[in-house]
Image (cartoon, rainbow, N blue to C red):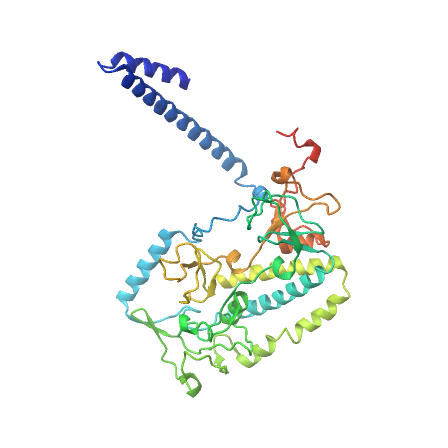
Length: 448
């Protein structure tokens, strides 16, 4: 159809063409014919895409069981997508600006922006901390039975006795190896990663860490810092607890609460004593929280002694349950306590604002003088899920590169627990492609 229209259009041009050289007329006809054909091809492709999209939306809108495997990592020059649309962020900024103009001096009422704790999230913070300790203990035991392989040149990880044959290596000199991985033994840090951030003594009064303070302020796992800000008490990392909300005067946070001599110390130096104050909203003092927040010395020891006698299946199921408890609890806390991440690198900071340490080496860092491009973080930025290829049968040969479109993926923790005997969770059944039958190696050429 498109070819006939193009020919008719070319004949019409030849008839209507005026007196000009044959060579220029031929070039003009070819150019117009090419653009005409290209225009109709684009229309056909667009119509085909819309029809496929309509069929997909109609067929799979109510069936979430066929989610695809995670997309490959983005390019380092591309910025991370915003979890909240930019239009919504601009609208929020305008509303906050109008509220400051209407009421320059106001008391912040909503915790944790006013410096107080969120009462219902204090126990969640303790649960997340205990779940993290349980996950690390379970992984250290499971790795003694199910080995982990990691590539020597890139961040690829594989769960099993032998690495896969899928050619996805992007490390140095990967082209000489045809993108094949070179495997070595991995550890717990390859299965799950917890990025570190700066610890904040006062998340409201001094939410930013300066560049000159980068060596004086300790860096701890971000999930641990989130639990501390949400109500967890650890002696090694003290934090300030308020009993009265702070005020906002023309956009600046002002604290009128009476402070003692300990709080009058220079905020640039790292204090070593924590206040034992009573929070009326929480209804419990900080000493009781500290006693209940010491699972590393009490609860974890009891859990460790209990897990020694458990079988491998029970241990893997318990570890997976703790993993989901940690992820769900962290998501609940992140809804109230803000977490920031750099849009170009892996840096994370827990608090209302990002730090000012000039340590970014990602794309376009020269234009920012090494500062990070802070934006809202997601759970994947907060806890490294590290997706790996799913192995259905550990006794079968290694995963073949020609059959990679039939393989699924899963977080490394889930894959490790599943290979150790835990049941497959419903959340990752579609991602693991359990309903897809992969052909044999000698049947690859027979598959379309």
